[in-house]
Amino acid sequence: MSKFIGLVRNEHMKTFRRLSTWILLGILLGMFILIAGITKYYAEDGGNWRQSSEQQVAELQKQAEQTEDPVYAASLQEDMAVLQYQLDNDIAPIQTDSVLGFMLDALLNCGPFLIMFIAIIAGGMVSNEFSTGTIKLLLTKTPSRFSVLTSKYVSMLFTTFLFTVAFLLFSFIVGVIFFGFDGLTASRVVLDNGEIVKESGLGALSRDIGYGFIQVAFYGTIAFALSTLFRNSALAIGFSIFIALFFPTISYLIARYDWSKYILFNNLDLSAYTPGNTPIVDGMTLGFSVVVMLVYFIIITAITWLSFIKRDVTA
Image (cartoon, rainbow, N blue to C red; front, side):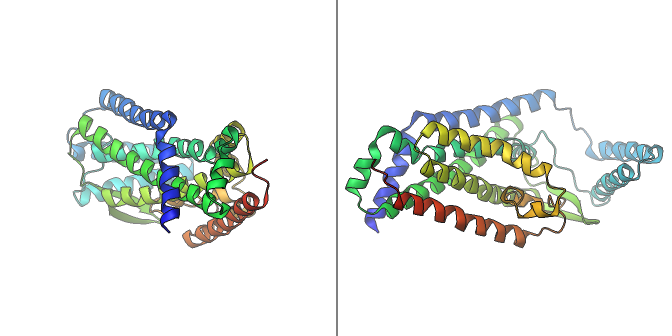
């Protein structure tokens, strides 16, 4: 076990010795500062939230009476129901220019960049060893190919965890600097299946971060598999980024077909099962998506480990 821990530590040191890793973290921090600055500059003074919500209800009511589109009218009624519930129960909405509102928006808007960053790191973990020729030396010192690949994968998961923590800390620190601590304990109110649901904003953020970690880790697993199958690091990283950026969009475009619920990328975003959201394909459940992910995980990891163990990696 101590030898395996040593391998994981060695792989982790390799990752954080690379300048590219710190550049990615710097880009992440820079994005948060830029978004916070823009939000701070353009955000309107919320003033009296009750007065603002009452005005919104009146405007939505007027639009609902004027529209002839029943679907749009129903959507307006749902928005009015949420606003009215907040007014009746004296629940201030989460403001965009608050630390909690900023963190929730950052998770929604910058989450895809976190996926791409992990894809870049994971996509080069094994293929870089082939490109530099260090794979021969590594396997000479460590006779078990299984332990070599497993240590790299565990290091990738740990790196994903650290990047997720950094994402959370950066957004919190930047949010506090720009917006202060006000609104940190605000509640979120949404309409879920026709019923009003009130939940803690921090609780919702914690849950969404957890779901986000699972999604990012799975994309990292895909990138890690490509890094193992392709000896060319540029090809492995490039294809990993392509999958992270475009495959979710492709899956969304075919979501109108019932069979698309068995496609992996339509099951990775578990936030679709949180209050106020709906799954991309009708009939999907959280349990169903977890099972689909597990099946794909077993297939992907089996192919990855078998190919690494069986192929002539020293050639």
